[in-house]
Length: 62
Image (cartoon, rainbow, N blue to C red; front, side, top):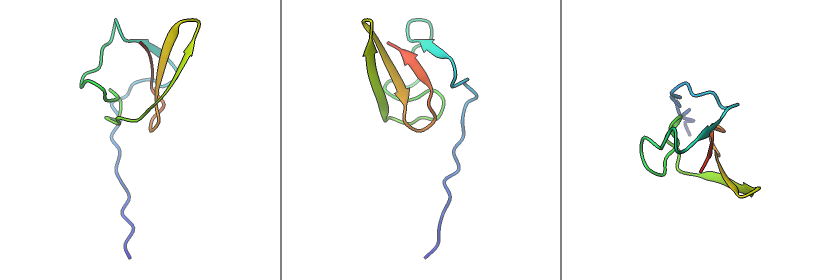
């Protein structure tokens, strides 16, 4: 049994910043701009919808 490591290429976005969707919409709709992942954690606080990538942690307020 061989173990293959998946090489992940990030685009260089800072994952500590919360990006605004109006100023920076998705390059590919429904995908993370940083890693291309389609799975997100989402939360709502004070009527602001926050989407966080499960793979790299990039955040956008929608």
